[in-house]
Length: 104
Ligand SMILES: [Zn+2]
Image 1 (cartoon, helix red, strand yellow):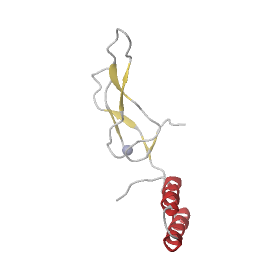
Image 2 (cartoon, rainbow, N blue to C red; image 1 turned 90 degrees about the horizontal axis):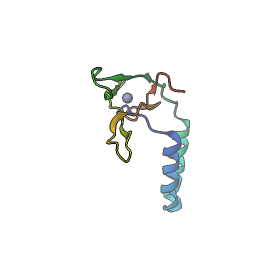
Image 3 (cartoon, rainbow, N blue to C red; image 1 turned 120 degrees about the vertical axis):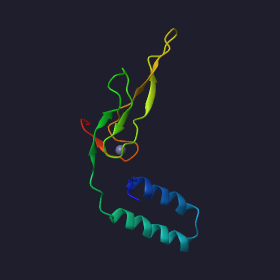
Image 4 (tube, protein in one colour; image 1 turned 90 degrees about the vertical axis):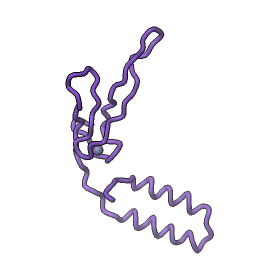
């Protein structure tokens, strides 16, 4: 499996699990936290959002790295407005974690 998880989130999850354990088992989780802390970082991939249909006003987009879809959000709604779905072009791909071109 080649995916990305947050180091801090993994360590925090182990801390929460550790609180419910007896000492002998907690030592194992502390060692696991140290191992996770010492792991090298994965190289950051850079991708871009690719529009799938150029002929429509609000096309869906895909990540150039994993082909995951950009999240779609409803915008333009109001009292008399129906609104429409529009791709939310995030700075990072929610599927693979790639940093998108133009992200700050
Ligand atoms: Zn992706």
